[in-house]
Amino acid sequence: MTGRVYLDWNATAPLRPEARDAMVAAMDVMGNPSSVHAEGRAARGLVERARAEVAEAIGCKPAEVIFTSGATEAASVLAQLRGHGAVIVEETAHDALWAHFDLTDAETGNNILAMGLANSETGAITEPPEPVGGRWRYGAREAGMLLLDVTQAVGRIPWSFAWSGAHMAVLSAHKLGGPKGVGALIVKDGLDIAALLKGGGQEMGRRSGTENIVGIAGFGAACRAAMRDLEAGAWNRVAELRNILEKTLASGAKETIFVGKERARIPNTCCFATPGWKGETQVMAMDLAGFAISSGSACSSGKVRESRVIRAMGFDAETARSAIRVSLGPTTEESDVTRFAEAWLAAHEKFRRRAA
Image (cartoon, helix red, strand yellow):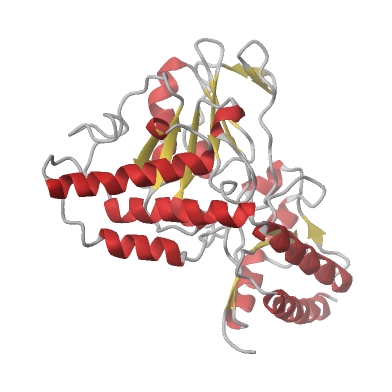
């Protein structure tokens, strides 16, 4: 068997056929969703159908879904919430949340706790602390509001905004097989926030700008297909493949560390480090061998630096610089996993001999 093997689903999932079909159909809808004529109403119908599909997938009300250009834009809501108090960010959260870290008002106001439900680099699941008296404690600090980044979790593990207790959540379409450049901010019904973008008042006055109906239609269709796969048990098979991969690699590389293996993880993610063997070197070697993997989150990959996430988990700098991530999906085949394991172990043996 020849051809490239894609094992970087946490960076972006392949576009689902259902999403592609919905996007192609939406391209023929010429109206502006804000127009009241028939063409405009047809465009509005696409947006509202997708809103309902996203809401059903994540267990919220359609009116709680605000379409954005992605999770990063959605997370920018933290910037305007700073006036309520400090933004407290979980240590292993994505950079999109860390960009808003601010403890200047930590002792006053209604602090906001921002957390990632599933880590993009390790797959580790971090459950929010149980609120006490309507407040969340993180370390020595308390917060009265909770924002969750569920980008890597939606469609891969059961989760519902309604029972999470969160005030807000952020996600991106392309992580679950939708198009790039569209996402959503989920805002609990009754919570008042200022507009992310000011202008014409679209998205219920919370994010101005003509809606990207093509991307939004693809987002909705991807959510519907993702939930179908989840309910059918597709990700249980993915977990089995991930376990086969880790067992095979461990059998031939005794010194390799599997990061987060002892914790609850989303089913598709394998993060491992061979101290002394730089992650970017491994990524390049595997690319030349025909495999797409990464050495961290897509937003930090390509930058020669140690993983902040892995350092925050207690590993030393050398281990953090040596970590790579393999992430699978429902279309990954067992032969893809075994071929990768063979290629990586062969490269590992060359590294071991050079280091001896």
